[in-house]
Length: 217
Image (cartoon, rainbow, N blue to C red; front, side, top):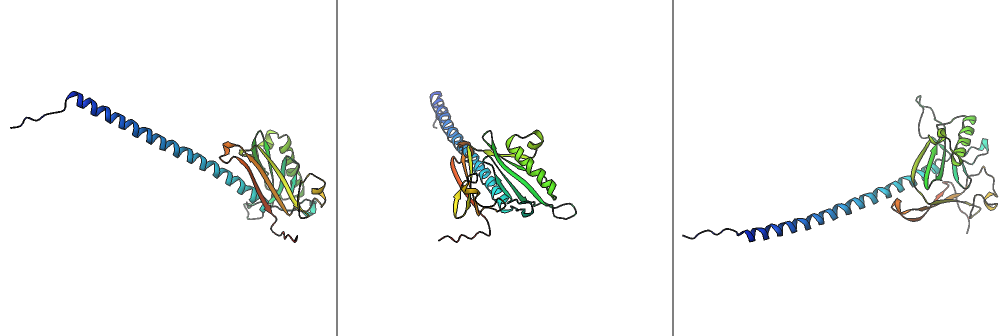
């Protein structure tokens, strides 16, 4: 009859130590994977915010509504704020046309902001909203700020118009050779993004007027 031999205390201590080391290594590997996943997810969310903001920019321009009766092209840039008149996508409770919105985009305190009025249907209401959008872009009151939406961090931005087969500064004499009640053939947006947005550097986005046909050869 053979006598069964158990583990000695030294062997048990060695086995426990090895298991503890392996458990620690496994936890460090798992922790690294979790951290990488969180960083990747945060990056994806930041890029999604950028894509959403730029989609809103395109949607606003696609819905621009010039108002010839008011000698308004539907878009105005003063070097700091872009104001535009666009078709409202909401409908009134009775099913009638809600009219137009006055929308403005500006940068304040390294933040890109968007402002939108309530739907307007009369000349007087439009003029009031248009003036309010300009005031908001310069020195907003608490009432003006109530209509704004913070979008994302932004280092700088610039607008350029395409008119007369050339890109021009909207504020220069070359950019104002045509009547201001005429919508530009295209609008170029340049934005400089900080690293906190997930996409650091400059992005250029061109919007082209739907019925524009460039005949330059």
